[in-house]
Length: 640
Image (cartoon, rainbow, N blue to C red; front, side, top):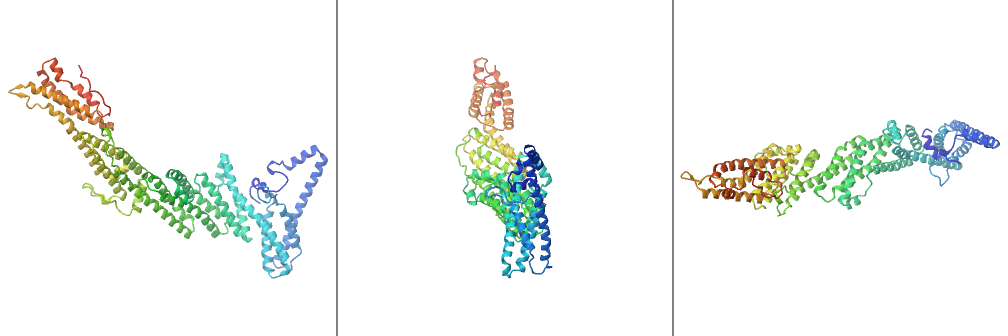
């Protein structure tokens, strides 16, 4: 036989462990040194055993030559006496394959015996087939036919065990390869398509399959192959982290547990589609090379069960309760099913491929439809945020952060997939969508882009409503500026969202942001400038001191009010914070410096000046620089 001697030697019967034995020459030499007489006796026994073995080999071969004449019909219908002698020799030889009942391993012949066992199996199959047909109705030949049948069944049973052991050998070699990186690399270089099987083992498996099929044991051959390979594949999937779980168990899982199972499922599905399906297909073709239809059938039946098992997991996930945080795991499953569907067409027989493709398409559709529902549920989560408590300081609302980060991640990581999902599985356009006048190309946008815009428009309307919760109109504008800026920054940081929205909508949002800025200044700082109005201060060419004093008092009071009110307001974006400060300073500082320079001299130096001129331009500038950081600070001290 041709399979690996190290592996097969563990199946031999005998009085010692093959792995721990020493070479025969060394053993004899050692025995002679200890007891020369005993050694001579042992050597004589060994030589006698070898002579007996040589006689059996010769007699089996010679007896079979004589039987060949009988099988060819040259001897007529008379059964020659050599058949009984041949059967005696076969039984004697096969008896050496017996192993103790409690021993591990299977009775497999020694590979050093030049393949005699496989020759005997082939001979017994021919003999059994011939006598069963020729002497079927001859009752006188019954005992001999029965004896031939028993021996044939016996050798076939041993052959079946050998087939099973060699098929299981892949798991043994893989385990050894896991512990020895070098061995694993050598094995991969030698046979990358059949991990764990050497060329010798593959040749032997091919030979055994032919012997079992030609000997009438095709059912046993197919069953052993299916069971052994199924166990091996399941062990492989377990190593990838995916374990067989029933549909009921998956549906009873909490989402946290189910979520942990999805990455191993994705990895297992990819490995199967990219590696294991192809390897199993080629393995079946190699072992059953004389029976291509059998190879296809065994492969299809074996992988079909595994494939449906993988799809069942995806089906169960699709039936779980919907929530927005599940979207991305659903899309991972969808992408996996989509990207690896082509493996079915190239490997499976037409009818089986058609069935599995239909199952995969149905599962993918369920995942896609559920993903759309989950994405659309984002609308409900936005609408359901009905809190009446305004965000302190007019800062970015948590709803804005959640929605924009959700949309950004969805677009950055899954935009192409979402486009495909909405295109293939959406039943209708987003409801109640109101296009704007500057977007005449809405009809040319993809279903996903339209729905993305709808969600962002909905967010805008919710934020507009929440801005009304602020009693101070200026703070309401700060709130809209903060949220508008945050949204724009997310759009700017995501080319996918920007592309989906289009330049027109981006420009419109930028324009709205500037309007909120201007509105804020009108509500706050422009009213402060009214105090610096020179109207009514000159009468008949003279400055009216009471009116001037009132203007300074009014300016000081409003300035202090602005500080007291807005010291805790927040502008999160540092760039916008700087832009606001520069804009405010550009309006107030020059106007105040001019007013102060023109009219401060009309106040009596000393107590009067200190009473009405509380701030120098530098004081106001320092105050402005301290705005919008969200910390309450005291009024800057007047500089000397």
